[in-house]
Amino acid sequence: MVTRTVDLRSDTVTKPSKAMRAAMANAEVDDDVLGYDPTAFRFEMEMARIMGKEAALYVPSGTMGNLISVLVHCDIRGSEVILGDNSHIHIYENGGISTIGGVHPRTVKNNKDGSGGKCLPVEYIDKVGELAKKHRLKLHIDGARIFNASVALGVPVHRLVQAADSVSVCLSKGLGAPVGTVIVGSKVFIAKAKTLRKTLGGGMRQVGVLCAAALVAVQENVSKLEGDHKNAKTFAEGLNKIKGLKVDVTSVETNIVSGLVVNVKNVD
Image 1 (tube, helix red, strand yellow):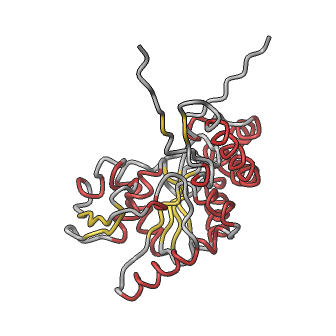
Image 2 (image 1 turned 180 degrees about the vertical axis):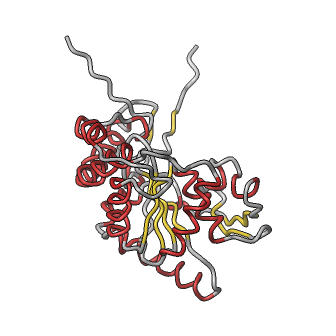
């Protein structure tokens, strides 16, 4: 009897597919720190096109992608960044913007739709972009699962981030690549970001091996996200049928099931 385990801890625990492994094994590579890795170049060009920005840069992690983006925009120590009090940058990235960049977080309270796999509508993002431009501020989007949001909202990803000056796109969450994040923005932004990537130790040599898997993820897995969202909804509905468990099914918009309430009664 074959036993199959479905690991629901996180979409970060996926394993590279056979197609990804084959692409990695056959990737054409060179030294990307010197700017000569052809697979990295093709991947970055493709991601810039998909996201509707001028240029892109592959980095090892989402945390580094967000840190680099903030440091490019806030290049004077003592600058402030306005962000949600429950945002990933503020809670889960070890205070890098402060300890490394000397950037002060000015937090505002997250709304209920500001976490837990929920999608912010494009109209809201546009309004934030307009507000930022009015006050001569830069807008960065932490797009850890931006493709999930795009699919759930039915809005092309380039349109969803149109108002942003920079976006970090995680490749190893919903998309299922083994490693990495890509940041996108203007050519000037990416040139500065590349220097900071080197400063932070994120310059990698034959990185085309990883970019090859990421390209497969983008080409093959975006179309599977709608199915992931349906499975998450079905899972939430199933949990509600278990005595003592309760989930707000209406809050499940993408591939994340959050807000599980466990009602445990004392037993004599």
